[in-house]
Image 1 (cartoon, rainbow, N blue to C red):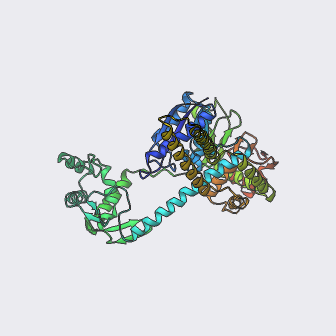
Image 2 (image 1 turned 90 degrees about the horizontal axis):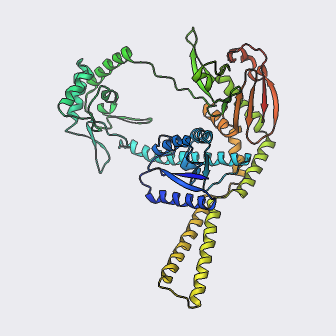
Image 3 (image 1 turned 120 degrees about the horizontal axis):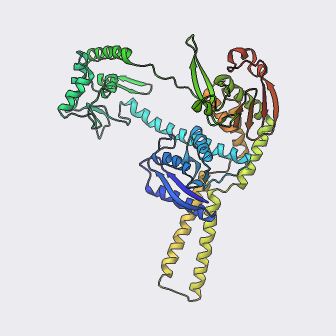
Length: 501
C-alpha cells in the first residue's frame, strides 16, 4: 500500500517545526502499518477553513492518477475544519480509490467510526470558531479605537507603526483625489487608468491601473473619513482624503453606469445534499440546478449528473425539487435517529469506540516504553564495563528523548480528555433541539447522520448512519398539505418513499 502525506499549518506565527512534527508522526505510522510513503503535499500558512490551498488541490487532482492508495494526515483538522469540505473531498478521494487516514486518530470502519469521525470534525469546527471569536474580540477593541485591523491598506493611506492608526500618505493621496475628480467630471474610467499608467503610477499592490481598479476605490467610505469594521461605524474616525460632495457625485455616476452595464448577482443557493445524493438508475451523483418558469419564478432541483452532462439518452431520471426533498430528509432523520433509545445506543457506540481507537497518547506511551528499555539496556552495559566513545552521547540523547516524551504525554492528556457520556449526550441533544428551519442546522444534521440518498422515478431511499430502523412513508404523509405545491416535476400522485437504514 502506498501513501502520500498531507501536512499544513495555519499562520505565519507557527514554525516549520510544526510541519516536521506532522511528517515525523505520519511516517512513523506508515512504517508501523506497512505503508510506503511516496510523496508529500504541504501547505504553509493556509487555514483549513477554506479549500483554497494550492498543495491540497494538487493532491486531490493527483488522486485521480492512481499513483497512491492513501492520503495520510496527522489529524483530521489538517485536512479540513468544516463539514462540507471534509465530506466533499473525502468523497472525491474515495471515488478515486484513495482512503483518508489520520495517523493520530485512526477511525474504525463500523458505524461507530463514522460517528467518531463526525465528532472529531465537529470539534475541529468548534475550536476554529472559538479561536475566531477570540481574534474577533481583539479586533473589536482595535475597531473601537479606529485602529487598523489587517487587510490591504487603501491607496492614499499609510498605517502608523506605533499607533496603528490611519494616516494620509502625502505621495499617493493626491492620486486618489485626482481619480475621484476626473470620474465625477465625466471622464471614462478606461481613460483615467491609461493616463495614470502612462505616468508610471501604480495601484496599492504595484499593478497597472485598469477599469476595475476603481470600483473598490469609489465605494470605499474611508476616503470620506468613515471608519468601518463589521457593525462598528465611526464617522470622522480616520482622516478624509475627499469631501462628501465629491464622493456623492462619484456614487451617483457609478450607480448609473452599473445599472446600464451591470448584471444582477447570481443568487447563492446551498444544495445541502451535495455529495450525499445519487441517481437510483445509474448511480451517478446528483447536482443542483435551477430553472425559471414563464411567470419568472425560479425553481431549484437536483438532477442526475449523467443527464446534466450527456443528456437524457444516457439517463432519463426526472429531476426532483430541492426544498421538499431536503426538508423531508432532515425531518425523517430527526424522527428516526433522535429518539431517547437511539441516542443512548449512539452514546454506547462512541464510548466503546473510544476504547478501541488508537490515538496519539498510546503511540507516545509506546515510544516512552521503548526509550526506557533502551536506557535500561545502556545503563546495564555501562555497569558491566562496556563503554564506547559514543556511550555518553547516546545516553544524553535517550535521556533527552525520555524527557520530551514525558512532556508530550502530559500535554496530550491535558489537551485531549476522553469524551464523557454527558458531553456526547449534550452534543447529540443540540441536534434534536436545534432550529430545524435553519439552513445551517439542516446542513449539520445531513452531514453528520445521513449516509446517502438514492432517487428513483417512484421512490426515494434514505440510508442513515448508526441505525437499522426502517419504515415506508407516502409522499402526502411527508409533504402534508403542501404536497402539490412542493412536488417534484412528475405526475404520479402516490409516490411511496421507502426508508432503509
